[in-house]
Image (tube, rainbow, N blue to C red; front, side, top):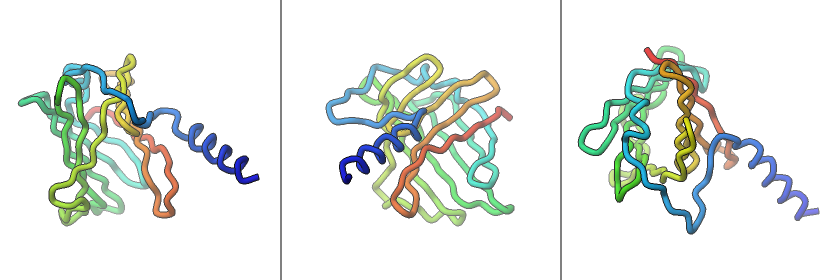
Length: 163
């Protein structure tokens, strides 16, 4: 019975994460440059977590593309993310830091949340549990696996329209 429960939970998790991939031991990131993601450049808005989301991506410069993210709920900033995708060792690395509405950091000073590149497949760039999808020049989807307070994980979709 316990084995059945473990297999069922694994399948439920696998089914729930249709748009993201997870890094596994032994994987290697493919060769890539910022040319593969420069279509993210611009100002994007959408809705998630019961509020308005906004992302602003700079064009490639200095081997990185910098971005800012903001979630506004009930007229107040819930949190920010600042980060970049950078070229490193012939591939891409997605790194970010979280801040609350008062700019107090969530991660320790020297820590970042890192997402290694897993693969590039057509209009999708798969990082570890984070996927960028180009729908058109005016629309993108981002998918991220988040951990809930109870320890469960779920895949969340962010749909953005260019501003």
